[in-house]
Amino acid sequence: MNGFFNSNFSTLPAALDAASTRNTIIAQNIANAETPGYKRKEVDFETYLQQAMGDGDGLELKKTNDKHFQKYPSTIRDVEARIRTVSNTRITNDGNNVDIDQQEALLAANTIRYQTLSRLMSMTIARYNTVIKGVR
Amino acid sequence: MLDIFSTMNISASGMTAQRMRLDVIADNIANAETTRTDEGGPYRRKNVVFQEVLNKAMGVRGLSTNTLATDQLGGVHVDSIVEDQRPFKLVYDPAHPDANEEGYVQMPNVNVLREMIDLINAQRSYEANVSSINATKAFASAALGIGKG
Amino acid sequence: MSNGIDPISNLTSLDPIKRLERIQNTQVSQVKKGEAEPDFQKILNDAIKGVNVQQKDAIQAEDDFAAGKISNIHDVIIRAEKAAMSLTMTMEVRNKIVDAYKEIMRMQL
Image 1 (cartoon, rainbow over the protein chains, first blue to last red):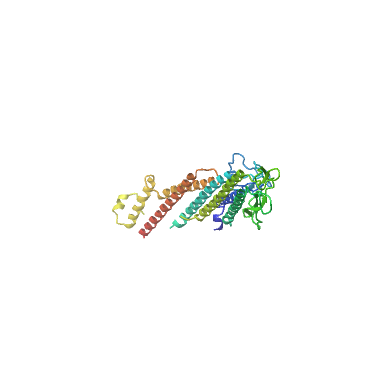
Image 2 (image 1 turned 60 degrees about the vertical axis):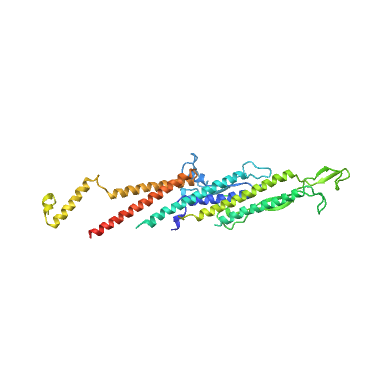
């Protein structure tokens, strides 16, 4: 039963993880919106999942060398979120590149995403329960 | 995974830092005309210095190739309160008790307008941290609802 | 033994074996006519195929949303609810068929 609700079962657990991680990253960005030299962080997941699903704008990841990508996802169930520091954008005088308005917008969108994903998770569980409980 | 609570701590640290900044701004505004301080001389503008807080993770699986994990993120803290070293303003006011021989008074290097803008920014940042805590609360609420009904 | 080619003599026969054969042959000829008669096996298979399509669509909707390809939340939720509904209905249909079957089995004894 252990493997039942992990990522082999659905893309939802990984997506929930990614949204949760993103929430923490946004909290860190907002807390450091005025810290000199701080560069904002971002979480990548959705684009990786799209690429693994095979239609990322034609720019599919081509594994030309096994060493190019660590943990290259072989199936969509293996895709994980990654944290990245953004250093190549416009900055203020003190070297900080956080746009607090953008972070707040991202915060709202990501929260809705997580709420939707957890509702979908509940419905997936309910479908299984229908079969388990309903069989006479 | 302590994500919910440690994430809330991050936002709380942001709120604390902004609160300290507000205190310092209030101090600056209140002393914008103070020519005599305990240390002698006019009031010198004060400023907070923020610093990112990163905890040492204890063997946590890194979520990226930079080995940065969410458990290491500790928000922000006020590293120090420093005095603005820019020169005092010289104001011509011979009637002032602290005027020098040429009639100039050294006034604090506080620009009240600038302080007001800082105050608004600090307020904005404080509220953004509150939004962040509320979002984290929504996460906890949603997670608790999985599987119910 | 008679193979039921002469139904009239079997109808009036008091021989229980011949009566059974009459019933049996009537059923066989009805099944051969086929299309107009309800076929529970086919109904169940179609329902299962239908529900599988719904389940797959719901899973596809989940994956697409997780990958950020869908921005309409209501789209995903509706597809998931459809799958839940069709699954519940199929379960009910299946259970009723099983119940009916069990009852028939009891009758024959």
